[in-house]
Amino acid sequence: MIRRLRDERGATAVEFAFIVPLLLVLVIGIVEFGHAFQVQGTLSAAAREGVRAMALRNDPVDARAVVREAAASLNPAITDDQIDIVIVGGTVDTCPTTGAGDTAVRLTITYPKSYLTGFFGTGIELTGTGVMRCNG
Image (tube, helix red, strand yellow):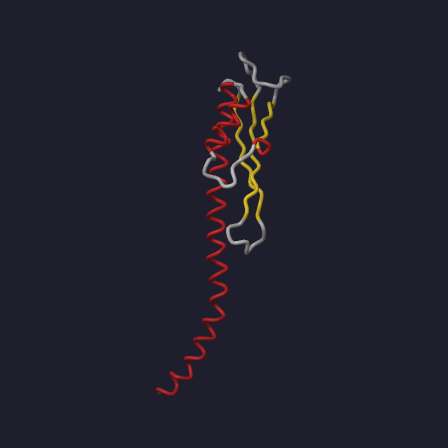
């Protein structure tokens, strides 16, 4: 019986060697997905804050500043060319001060997120979008 247990020790080591790479890929995937999910949540929240600022104050510079402040935890930081502000449903370039009607503002943030480990490639592009009717 002791000899039989000794013979199985090698089999256990081989099985472990087959399973470890799969487990490592699974753990790395969970970490990468969790980080991407957190960044996506930050982008969505920043887009909502920025579109709210634009809809109420009608100032694109202020809206961009609000987005950068709301997403201050991201590294690298969001730049102005990653923030796109569009007025939809109207014939004007800014939110009207009275009687918004169907005019809304859409703010989209495009953010290149690099992977933490580089195991799955260099990175992905995430977006956060917020839409709000002008004047709230």
